[in-house]
Structures are given as structure tokens and as C-alpha cells.
Amino acid sequence: MSSTNRVPPPPVPDPTKIFQRGLFKGKVVLATGGGSGIVMEMVKALMQLGADAIIISRSKEKIESSAADLSRETGQKCVGFSADVRSPAQLKEAVDNGVKELGKIDFVICGAAGNFLAPISALSENAFKTVIDIDTLGTYNTVKATMEHVKRTHGAYIHVSATLHYRGLIYQAHASAAKAAVDALSQVIAVELGPFGVRSNIVAPGAIMGTVGMNKLSKKKDGEDQMGEAMLGRWGEKSDISSIACYLFSDAGAWITGQKFVVDGGELHMPPQMTSGNFPYPQAVVDPASVVGLIKSRL
Image 1 (cartoon, rainbow, N blue to C red):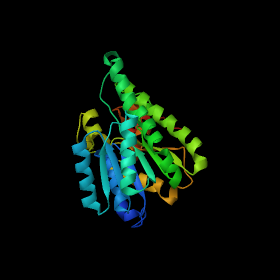
Image 2: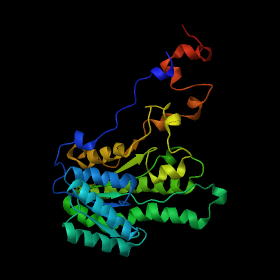
Image 3: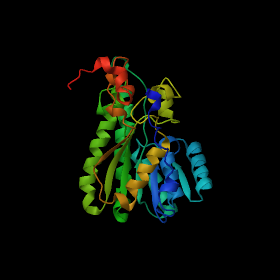
């Protein structure tokens, strides 16, 4: 048996076929960084299940275009406002305008982020601070601008983190520090806002195809050769992340708060030596006889 005989990779989920139609009818989600990528896909899934949405991003033209696209594709109402998450005043204005349009906020996705590749030796203090300001301070500002609204609806937060800081990753000191702080902030939010019926959780995506981050941080746009041999046999898709968002915002997640959900197909469990030629994976588990020379029999 060769590694090609392993079982097929898991199916790509479609939230509209998993969750009940109308699940989020009457609900309103606000999302920063909602004009593209993973966060836009999360918003789209919630809207397909009945929610209306407020999306926020820095580019006025882009966010208004994305809002129009989401409304057209889902039949729900989506309004877009331009604001920089680093500016409390801009965020407050966008939140207030969104509430005027849609009446309330039930769910918040903190998804605004910045990243690039740079070793510490070439990473300026200003560059480091910029990522901290967008990711960490931006999350804090979003929570401050929305928390009174979310307390009134006994709603929930999802903070889009990353897996960078769960083990050291070169060229990612800035983003790792920023996302580690977001993880810690979410836990405090869970404790402080829990008595008001508000939940706060982290979703940490692994390598997700078709995203700006993936295109920036990976040499390959098609990761089939690399990820095809990893734990579950495929790269992540944006709907893998939107599905966990639907779960956490639904009543199925009503008793879940202060937690971190890593959605990476098992990538974190793949130390480098397991993908090396000396200890090939998954061949070593699919066909142990092929690596018998590496195994000391204890029978």
C-alpha cells in the first residue's frame, strides 16, 4: 500500500447545507475587515442563514462594493462603512451608523488584521507597532465600540486569530505577538462580559486557500503538493472557518466562551521531522512496511 491509498480528504463544508435555514433570522452581525477574505465569507454564511450585516473596512469604495455584493448574493441587508480600527472615533461613528440602519448588534467578528514577512533584524519598531495597532488595538477598539450593544442583545464575539504563535514561526514576530495578545484579550472579555450574557471566543485559521494572507505568506498558491501529504490531506477553505462561526454564534455554542478553536486540518500536529524524507508522513502510518528500516521491532 502506498501513500496514495490513504482515505480521501474531508469534504469542504457548505454551511447552508449543514445549518437550518433561517437560523439567524432577525440577528445582526458586525464585522471589521469584512470586505474580503475569510471574514467576508463568515459574514456571507451568516447572511445566507438569515442575518443582516454591518461590515467595516478602511476603503470606502471597497467596503460599499462588498456590502452590495453580499446583499445581492444573500437577499439580506448589508451596510458597509469605512473606518480605521486604530481610530476609536471612526469606529464609534461606523458602529453608530450601522445601528441606526439595522437597529442593533447581536454578533461581532473582530477580523481586521495586517501582516507581512520580516525577520526581527529587519523589522522596524514602527512596522512592529503598526501590526500591533491594527490587530490588537483594533480588536480592543472594536470591543469598546460595540460592547454596550452586544450586552443588550446578550450576544457574542469571535476574534479571528492565527496559529503563528502556538509554535515559533520565523519572520512573524509582529503578527505572532499581536495575535497572542488578541487571544489573551478574548479570555478577559469572556470573564468580564460573561455576567451580561456575552460570550467571546477565538477562531484561529490555518492555511486557507484563496486569501490575501495565503498569497502573501506562501510561495505556492496551489498547496496541493505540500499540504496533500499533511494530516487531513487538503488545505483549508474559507467555508471551514465560516462553518465554525455559524456553530459558535448559534445556540449550539451557547455554553462555550473563553475558548480557542484552531481550524487547521491538524497542521499544528505536524512537526517538521514528520514530513522529512527520513520519516515520511502519511506513508509511515498508511504503509508501515515501507519504513520498516526505521522501526525497531518490540515483538
